[in-house]
Length: 178
Image (cartoon, rainbow, N blue to C red):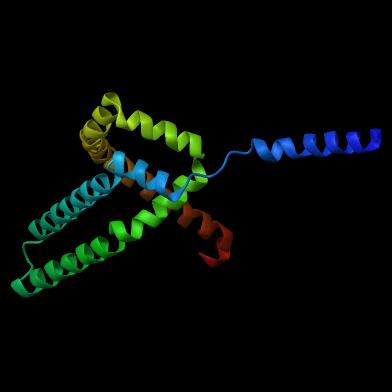
């Protein structure tokens, strides 16, 4: 009898760590979290910003190349429209939602999803959801200006690297092969 009790206690002790692992979130809870955090709207806003940046880039490129004729401009414009359509198709919510669901399922437990949903349903959580696009837009604007100021430095580093690689490759050939 003692060995039976010992076996039950031992098997219970071994099973406890497995029981302590929290269950993955359910699809319903993940849908609710994505809904209350307005992820679909955030993705739509991100797509709109991406389209606007692409449009600005194409327009700047066209403006800098005044020697282009109308046919060349049309080709470039058509290319931009194709890129926009590609982005809209490949980054559509219908394609992204399962990806979000999978990532959230792998990253969060059911309790964490429930806790986040409760927070985002609160006034402070809804304030965060409402204000986050503005925060991200301001962050992107800052990063864009920083990248613009770093552009010449990045160009110099790239040129220096290319020169170093060229010199290194030439040194490997030896003096007889110059």
